[in-house]
Length: 380
Image 1: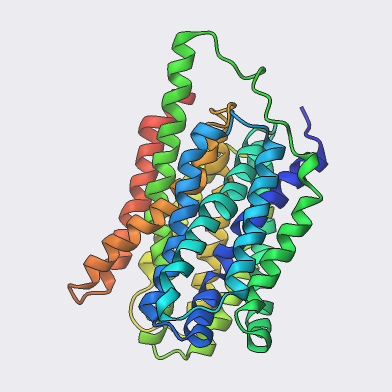
Image 2: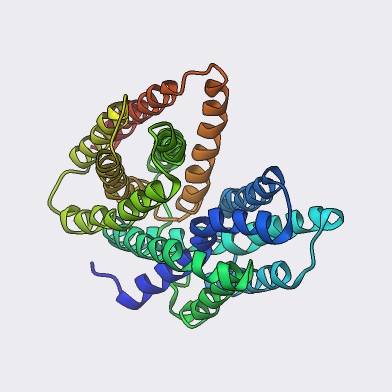
C-alpha cells in the first residue's frame, strides 16, 4: 500500500521541529558561553538537561502515544517549544538564575522538542513503508543540519543567542500548518489477538531498540570526538569545521541511496555492509592523516551512518505497528550516545585516545552480532 504524501511530509516536518535543537546545540552552547557569560561546564549542563529531557520524553512516549490524539499532542509540543524558547531568549540570565535556565531547557526538551521528535518518529513508523519514509526523514534532517551549520553561526554573530532561538520558534510555527495532516494514531487496525504473536511483537521491538542503543554507543561518541582527533593531527579549527560541513552535506547520499534501494536489497545485507564499512573507517583513523584523508573518511562514515539509519529504524517499526516502541527510537539513539560518551570519558583517563576506535568498532560489531543472532532469525 502507498502512503498519503501529505501525511508522510507532516510526520517528517513534526520530527524536524523536534530535533532541530539537537543540530544547533553546539552553537547554542557557544552562545551561552559568549553571550551569557557562563562557563563551558555550565553550558554543557544546559545542553545535557535539554537532551536528557528529550530522551525522557521519548521513553515516556510508551504511555502517551496511544492515549491522546496525535494532533493534540503535536499542538501541545509545539506550544511548549515556542514558549520555552521565548523564555530562553527574553530572559536575563546570570549566575543567580542559572538553575532557572537549566530548568527551562529541560522542560522545553521534555514537553516540547522531545514530544515532537518522538511523535514524528512514531508517525513515520506507522506508515505502510517505514523504511523508505525514514530515509526521507533522515534526508530532511541532513538538509536541515547543513543549513543550521551554515546559517545559525552567522545569525548568532549578529543577534546573539536569539540567532539560534528565533529559527527554532520559526520552524515550530511552520510546523503548526502541518499538524492537521498527521495520522490520527487510530490503533484499531493494529490489535493482536494471537497470544504467541503478541509476545513475539513485544520481544522483537525491544531487541531492535537494544541494537539501536549499542550501535549508537559506537558511532555517536566516535563522530563527536573527530574534532580532537583532527587537532591532534595539526588541523586547524577552521579546517576541521570545513571538513565536517562537507561530510554532513555529502551524507545526504546515504538516505537518498537507502530510499532507492530499500525495496531492492535485503535488509540484512544493507545493515551488515554499512556497519562493516563504519568499522573499517573507524579503524583507519590511525597515525597522521591529511585534511583530504580526514574529510574523505568523515564523508564515508556519515554516508554509511545515514544509509543504515533508515534500515534500523524501519527494522523496529516493521515489528511494531502500534507505535509503542517506535516512539522510543529517539531515546535509544540519545541514550546510546550518552552511555557511549560516559564510557569513552573513562577510557580517555588512560591517556590512550586510540581506545576510542577500538571501543566504537567493538560496539558496532556487537550490534551486528545481536541483529543476526536475536533479531533476523526471529523475523525470517
